[in-house]
Length: 220
Image 1 (cartoon, one colour):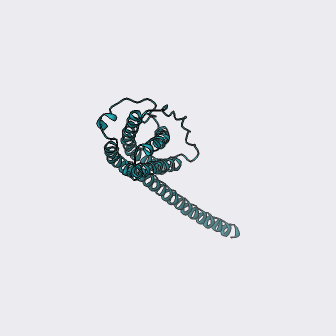
Image 2 (tube, one colour):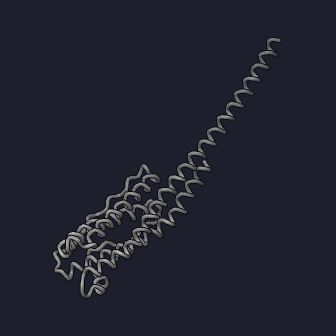
Image 3 (cartoon, rainbow, N blue to C red):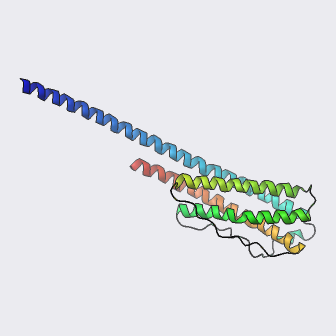
């Protein structure tokens, strides 16, 4: 009798333990799905903010180039058509998502010294009240905000992989007034091309990276 009672107690204990284990597994699975959904939402929000700002800057770059040309006087339509050395490449490189995002970030960083140099040149060429100067300041600040968003997007996807540092930026040698006007227009035009490439890559990354993270987290 005692042996039978012990056997029943042990059986009930095992049934209870099995039930608890099943509940724990269900809770763990639900928790992992919740975390996966949260991370996917964070990924989507991050890339959406970057994409929205890149599109806004792209539209603003069109108006900025128009303002720039009007501010340069005669022959301004020719300035953007002249070839200039030492202006960064607007094309995004890389095959993997991490490489593409890093390329976007480093390309944005490469333009900032050129923006600063264009602004300093135009400060000497324009009146202090020129709308071009305030537009250049605002556009440069927006571009830096975009770089910060790209950095955050990268860190959310690859928290253990630091962003590579870009190489040194080569600024042009001393220029005459005509060369300064040409240089500024080419910098703005090339950056506009970069923004177009950034928007296209971000649209692709949004569908690739965030959805893939959801699928991977669901599998595991």
